[in-house]
Length: 455
Image (tube, rainbow, N blue to C red; front, side):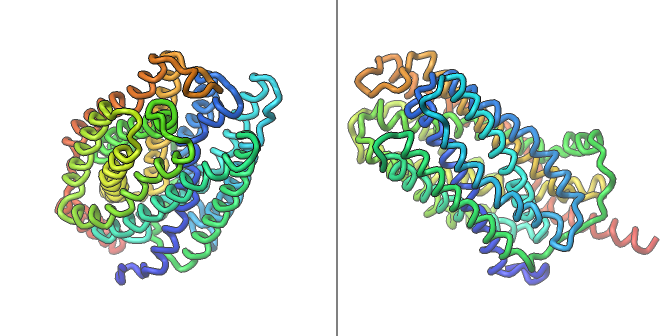
């Protein structure tokens, strides 16, 4: 895969398998967690949204700190792999307990339980996710190999989401009540996450590492380096708008299918999975397109996402086949809007190293994951506000929802994401890091390193 660094296909694929648990976690929490709170536990949408927002913001805010800690970790297993072991074991277990909320308790007790368990789960997840993602920048410095490596990761992500969104409804609808069904789902999914994390841990035992001496931790210096990394800031802001859009639409999709489109709840899993299938099929195509320019490919994907979001505003109810087609097209575009930015962010590590002489993979990827989590958290919260503001009735079936509630669901899934995608497009236009500029950065870094060694 990259003979110069010693990165083999076996290691690359094994590392990518670690994304299965991450994708399962994200897929279930974004697609079904609000639904669990409102429909299984009977919590009102606005309180449910707040209960999920607090842990998600905490999860996002600690990402850069965890990244900086992993940058400075020294062990016989390397900088990142100890966290794959500990985080991979714990976040799946905590996830299982998240869905054991006392359904007969008062609303306040249920909210407190969800906040506490989601905080624990999010913290454990961060200690796995940040070091794991940071490995993409330290296993190879090849501009195009990073795209292929990210392609493996994105295919695994789509498989993980596909399995999660199909299996989750089958599991939470398999028992007499949603409460018991979600409890079963949590245990099965939690075990799957643990297995994925352990697989990545053992598979990367021989993974190459680019290690530079780390300076003592200085929060102001870390913040200043990130603030002055212009390519990273532009990419980060673009990705933030993207995840606002994804958070709102992903959270609302199950409500759109059941309440607006009037489609049988048994088809929910297949509906949600359709986009994942489209993205998985399209990822190899986007890998090839990105070889001719990651920024241009990313921009094309954003334009496609904005267009499809707007078209979904006019999707008539009661047409399952049409919705399947639309979601598949959305998935084709999503393959590009996920691959490209995740393949671009490792390149900003070299931009920072040329300026500062340090490698901050952990800090950069921690802040990158903060962007994803913050954006999706706020997008999901916007969705919960729309449900509440437009009069959605928690725990009630489709017949009990008024026209305003249905309009709020539709707008949350279509118009809100469309506006956010447009904002992402205009921010991305300022991104300056081309392949030629990246190769120049590598030459400058090598020259500076040689000068230090001969001094």
